[in-house]
Length: 379
Image 1 (tube, one colour):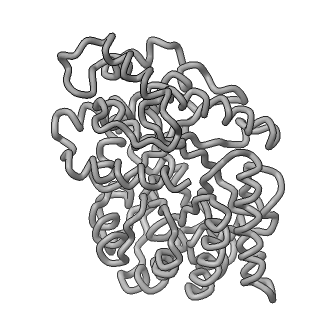
Image 2 (cartoon, helix red, strand yellow):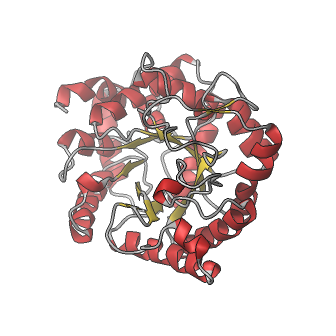
């Protein structure tokens, strides 16, 4: 996008971390000094509202070359990471070169933490990089050596991402599919109709991948396994009506083992689950994010939305409204995956305004930032 689109965010950045009365020149000096610190140095004691907001936003961009507006946002500390899609990747070496460019921009970022560099490398049909894991979850689940295949898939995914300089994989899918050809099964994205099998194999994948140093992300909580072939949250609203007993004993079942295995992040779906919250999609529901995932299952890691531009969310809601509502419900990271840098700008501006005004309580906001910072420090 044109540079003026980021001006709103940039004005906030030019406020001193210790108070709005400090001159912009002083901030520039402080930022320059911060850029000379070693990568392992602690983050500054105070950040501007926009920098604080940026710690909760994952950006995306179109094509093979990241635009200057994204590099600028990263250098100012307005990004937690970047998600990559097929259109961004021509080879592992090409995307590794792009990531080096993004990391170079991050070197002048006052938040001295690695960026989360992520993609969807589930296996089978859902892969952004060529190579491992080549087997789908369904193929692994049907194998006579399913556990060893799941371990190989996790290790292979991690090593493949590392070869492209990425450090986070939005996998595995823990959905427990119901019928042949349904939403998950049509693309082989579920290990089994048996929650125990999904639990076991998902945990093996998670452990094996995270052993390579690549963050795993279990998805799509509390589960899309009951969705029919036409119920796609990317395309439109999805309402799932399984009982609370089925939700907890089938769909949520694999997450208990994933959490025990140390999964570092969980993606929450955009479907509505009437047994838990008949009004809000899961990513907008504190009853699901806080009540089920954190309180009932004990997850203490990082939550991340599915695509913030998803069709399951009412089209009348702007990026700003979606961002604030998701953050208020308990989502730590917002996935701005429309391949449009202005989406990330809008999300940061909205979160910064809500943080400054107090419409998003600072204590909860800062706790989310701390979780994201701990994740970034772990890679």
